[in-house]
Length: 181
Image (cartoon, rainbow, N blue to C red; front, side, top):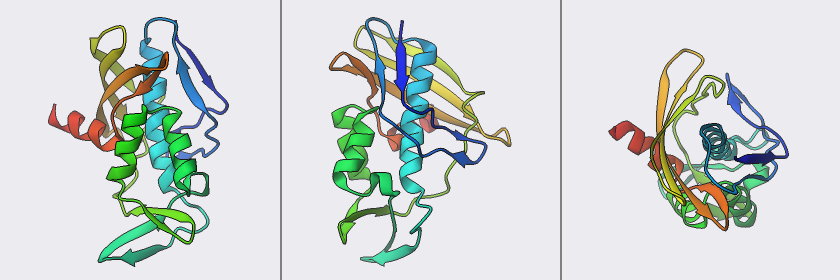
């Protein structure tokens, strides 16, 4: 049985992002359930998307010929970002995620390279299918439809780290692997 402890249930649902993302961890005395895996995938993807949303200072600015945007205040220092990410990602995946975002620290705040449009998945209708499972790792396919019924496919790797199930792939790795299938 998987017990999912979340201070707040955040989700990107039909264009609404909840930024009340308290610490979220999948505590597991045994197997990773389908519902627990889906909730963990949703939490990780939601955190990545929420970091991009900055309701206050969302101005883009140029740096070395590229466009950057400030991260949301809950994620705007390396320490805050790492804390938010490692609540649901393994240490290794959190490090890779931060590297992929090509972070820029300026004025004591973090900005990331401009990314494409944010997908607003309807996680109530998302489906997960396990592809491979062991006692410490799992691989699953998640089909997450949007409000207009376009489906985003994620291939999600899970790993037990410190007795807790966590995501073991970055958002970009999940999307690319899903696209390649």
